[in-house]
Image 1 (tube, rainbow, N blue to C red):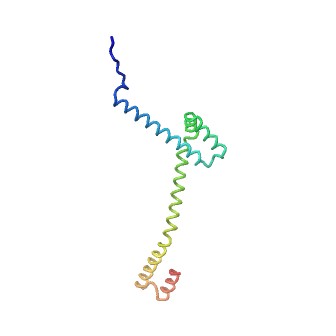
Image 2: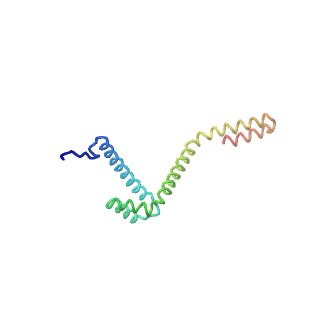
Image 3: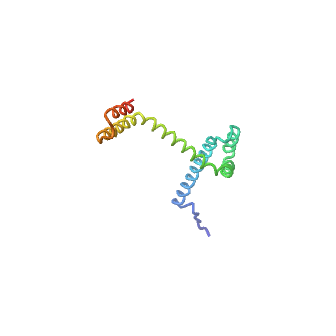
Length: 139
């Protein structure tokens, strides 16, 4: 019997599938290493020596280092990332409030003057009260 035996890898579609699978796993692995290294630097609870030790462990023995990091410190990764996102959002909101504050002041003054005018028109304010409140709003 001199028959040629075909293996599953001999089919081009399956070969392309396995190539894409290995590339996908490689990209996920690189992504995981980057996430762990970012988390090591993000963690304020660790001192510099602990960060250096984890970084060395993850880069020298990547499979064992990543697995150990995820087992021992993986539960806090999400918390640390959420805290960083809250900090960034708060800083952005503060910046927007501060930047829009200059424009918002003029709009706030206009609203206050409009309300004062309404109160004066209804007869709730006298002319001198209107002028006094107007001076407070404008200064």
